[in-house]
Amino acid sequence: KAIQPGESVTFDMIFDAQVPKQIRRSGRNSEEGVALSMAQWYPKMAEYDFEGWHTPPYLGREFHGVWGDFNVTLHIDKNYTVGGTGYLQNPQEVGHGYENKKDALKIPSGQKLTWKFTAPNVHDFTWAADPEYKHDILTMKNGIDLHFLYKKTLDKKYLKNWKKLQPKTAELMTYFSENIGQYPYKQYSVIQGGDGGMEYAMSTLITGKRNWGSLFGVTAHELAHTWFQFLLASNETKHSWMDEGFTTYISNKAENEILAKKDQNPHAGSYRYYKYVVENNLEESLSTHADRYHTNMAYGMGSYSKGNIFLTHLEYIIGKENTAKTLKKYFTDFSFKHPTPNDIKRTAEKVSGIQLDWFLNEWTQTTHTIDYGVKSVNGKEITLERIGRMPMPIDVEVVYTDGSKESFNIPLRMMRGEKPTKATIIEDWTFAHPTYSFTTSKTVKSVQIDASKLMADVNLENNSYGK
Image (cartoon, rainbow, N blue to C red; front, side, top):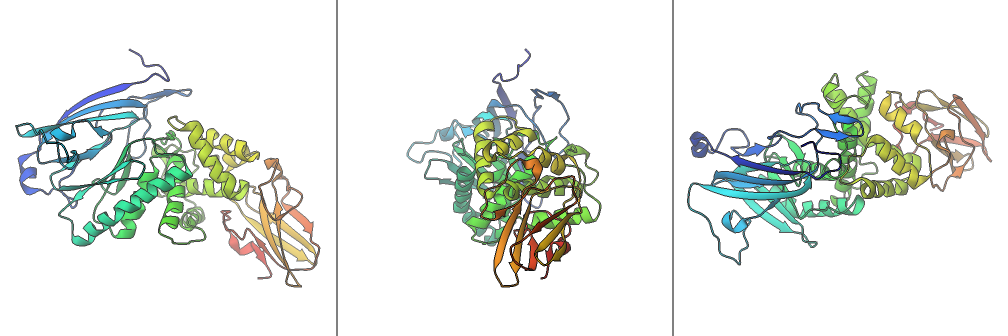
C-alpha cells in the first residue's frame, strides 16, 4: 500500500552471505583486508515530503532516506565477526564478544551463524564483517555501549591507536550530546572498513591504518554525522552543506577541546580552502545539487568549508552564545525530522531576534563575496568601504594616539537588531551605501576590521590602517 507522510515504516531484511572459499583461505582482498562492508546494499524507499517525491539515485556522494524500524537477519560463516547498525537480539547464540559473560553460550551447529539485529527509528542500515576483527566494548557511564571492531593483524602502532581511540570516542559522544543534544540510542560502532571514513546509522566505517591524529579526527567527524544527517536529517543531496558543513563545525570544536589544542580559530583550514577556491574562480553556489557540481573541489569546499563557515558566520553575526543556543534548539525542534535551510535560519532568528534572510540568501544561494576595507582615516573620522557584493555587520577595533583602545560594532540595517557585545554599538549601515563614516572621541592611530577573523573577507590586506 502507499505509505503516507509521517506514517511509521518497518523494514524486514534477510541477507544470506556465502563467503568465497578463496577469501576464507587468504584472509586478504585489499590493503585493508577482507572485511565485507555492506553499505547502500538494499533497495531504499524514496522520501516524500512537502516538496514531493525525492527520487534521485544514489551515485556515491550523498543520500536521503525514510525513517523506519529495521529488523535485519544475517546468515554468515561462523568465523566472521559482524558489527554495524542496531542492537543484536541473540548475543548468546552468536558470541564474538557480544555475549553476556555470566550466561552460557548457545552456539548452534552448522557452518553459519544467524545474526538478528533491530534498529528503531533510523533511515539507514549498514553492517560489516571480518574473520580478523577484534571486538572491544566500552560502556559509558550513561549506559551507552561503544563497539570497536578492528583487525587484530594490524601493526602494533595502529593497534595502539585503536585502543587509545576508545575513551576518546566516549569524550566525543559526551561533547556532542552536551553541545547539540543527547544521543538517543544505546550503542554506536566504530568499524574498520570502507575506503576512508563514512557515516551510517549508529555506526561508521573507517580505514584502520591511520596515525593517531588522523584516526581521532576522522572518528570525530563521522560520529558528529550522527547529529547532522542521521538525527537532523537534512536532504543532503540538495543541501550537503547542512550535513558536511555543520559536522565539520562541531567536530572541529570537539577536537580542539578534547585534544587541548587551544587554537584560537579551529576552523582556520575552512577559511583557507574557501579563499583558495574563490581566488581560482572555482566556487559554485551551495544551492547546487550534490551530484551536479562541476568539480569535486567545488563540492568539497562548498559542502565542508563554506557550510562550516555558515555557522562561524552566525557566531560573528548573532554572537557565539546565541549560536550555541541555536544548535540546541535546532536539535530539540528538528531531530528525527528532515530540516531545511529555512529551519536553521528561523531557529537562529528565534534565538537571537535578528533577521537573517539576507544572510541565508547571500551565503548559500549566491557566490557573492565579502570584502570590506578601511578607505581613509582623517583625525577622528574613519571611513570604511564595502567592496564585495555580500553585506555584513562590521566589528572595528580602534587604537588612539594616546594608546587607549575602543571597539565598535556596526550592525547591518537588514538585521533589524544587533548581537550581544561589549563594543560600542553605533548607527547601522545600509546595504545600498558602499561607504560608511563615523567620528570617534579621540585622534585615531590605527584601525582593524574584524580582529576575530570570523568574517570570511576575501582580501585582508585592506582591513587595517596604521599597522
